[in-house]
Image 1 (cartoon, rainbow, N blue to C red):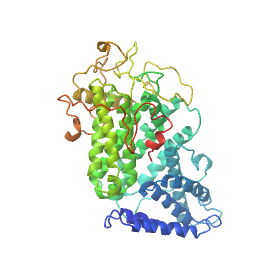
Image 2 (image 1 turned 90 degrees about the vertical axis):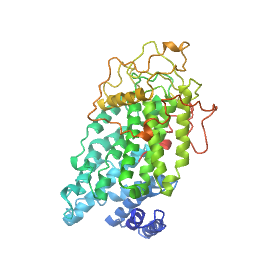
Image 3 (image 1 turned 135 degrees about the horizontal axis):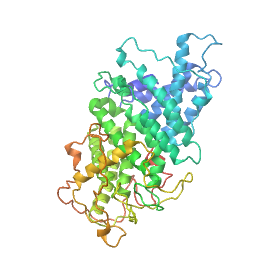
Image 4 (image 1 turned 90 degrees about the horizontal axis):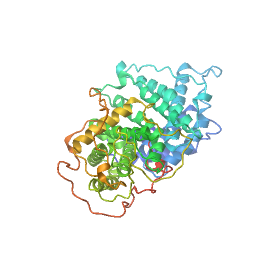
Length: 499
């Protein structure tokens, strides 16, 4: 398995070298020759661990995720015989450390896979007595470049953030207040300065310093169900008081940051980043989330900024030369084109079948557009009625996100177009940029990624955009249907399946 992964990331070999899959098949055949249930060894569990990583990160096979889930169950059972501290069996200290490191890596991988698939984990830290590894610095490299910093942070993040989220989401009827508490816990979890350096020359350290994508993935998976329900439910208008509004902003922000993080990594290491398919599948899921928000809620201030990020993703995919990643470009273009088409039709006041807009008597100027969607009314647990501010118990970063997105919307749309909604007289619609009081923006630490000229104004809205041809449906071959009822809360794991 090490040779299979090594051939895949070896930049001296062609990106589509068949040697990687050959070694992969040989490794699987070798495992079949070993009675793993009768004689479990550390080497066997290690080989299964690398097999799991290969299936999840490098394989493009349709059933690779399902295979990884089934294999994770077997590996978890076998691993419970190798994590013991070795006091009774008189294992040498170095071997004890290897076993501890392996077991903790399996704990992290198991929870990430369970969270991605929306299933309970096979291993629980609550039921284990395996001590954490010693995290000894690598003597062959600079202390700041040693990988033990990343390993220590990753395992701490698992204990304090990842496993509590997996455990909470595995239980039926989770309260939304618990979701906001877990979100707050993740956003407050510190990242060491060693993992925030931008001038590392080591490829290994560069990948380990890319800790933002894993953190974003956890937040995306925490909020994705509530994101879908907020954009699919006709029971209450979508505004600041919507009970799931923080989840919509959290998913939008996580998707935006995911695209920007992969873009940054690709600019620094294009050859290596292009070969890690996990980055590109996560980016594609981020595009789906942003496009869904733009299609269902073009009235929100998040939508114009979302168009900019969709353009960022389009340019990123077009720059990739790797065959497997570039194969997604046609589907990506269809999804982005649909979102752009829907937004432009709303801009010109045309009928848009993906949304229903209804104003309320009491308007909240924090999010100035009010929308309603059609959907599945399923709710996991009884929720309190909407409050004046659903962001009251959310992390301030989400409020900052809305404020920055609103500033971008003001630049793209200095004047608001008359909106097409259920109100008979469009003059009763609230102004686009009426904020009382104005939001506070910390310009010293912006949270949205940098805008460059190619994406700042994707439609050229200094002039009126052209009216697109009117069509009745937005579906195409192998693409996402954004019409009401086409996507419901139970489909977010297929189209937004981050790992």
